[in-house]
Amino acid sequence: MLVILILGATLIFAGLYFLLLAFLARNPANLSTAVGSLAKASGYKNVRGAHGNWIIKDQTDYTYAYMVNGRTYHRKGRMNRHKRRLPQKVTIVYLTRFPRHSGIEAFTAQVEFLLGLFMLFQGTVLTVICLLICAPTLG
Image 1 (spheres, rainbow, N blue to C red):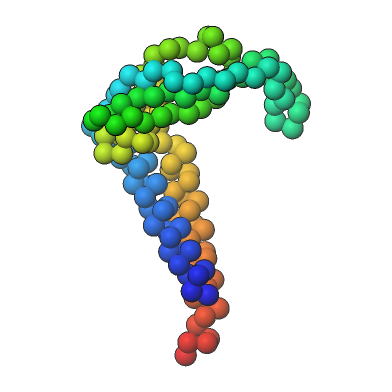
Image 2: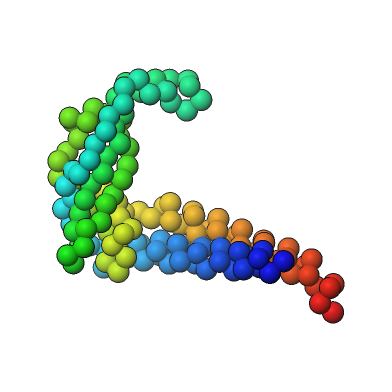
């Protein structure tokens, strides 16, 4: 039970962290920009889409490297175009205090917000269930 309680508390704190990132990204004063250079690109041909319903002709996994305060960070992603058509330089928008959290051309933090809500909910549910199970044995 102690392990489940610790896991629930960890999920709650991680959820609060991601929600903090999402709320920081809403204020433009907390965002900065850097130039990202294409570090790696690997292309695939005729990739099947979701559930195999369609075929994507060219798909490329890319990695852009950008530097903040002398430290190099990487932004990975996937585009549906040939690797020769990827831009060599892009604008990376990142959180000033947390440069690892970034986006290409814009940083909306939608994923961080949804992940924060999900983790906060799961951590709360785990903690409440654990306390309900442990409550009769404690008193």
